[in-house]
Image (cartoon, rainbow, N blue to C red):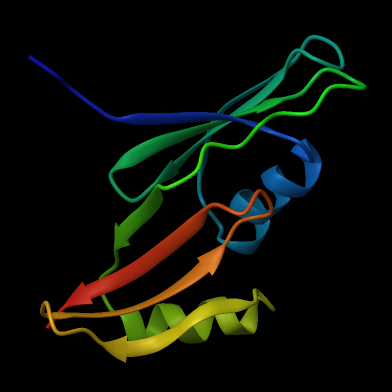
Length: 121
């Protein structure tokens, strides 16, 4: 039986990525470690899942996966939209009612990962 979902990725700009999730989106940090340049990691709580960000070894580059998005339900998408704007995060997709019964907007994280925030109508 499954228990929880954890999305794991390597961030080309680890510090910028951690700052985005921790300080801009204000996601709670669950765990962090730093055992050297290629041995850094941070786990945050986002929506009902964990997101684990790992540093890339110096001189290396992580190839980001293509064709996926994160979709996070929030209590009040209008209030969250204002919160995100107030943090200076660039809006990728403006807030709008969607034909499938959600009101949503989207942003990109520093790695180009699209994050959709929504509330059911």
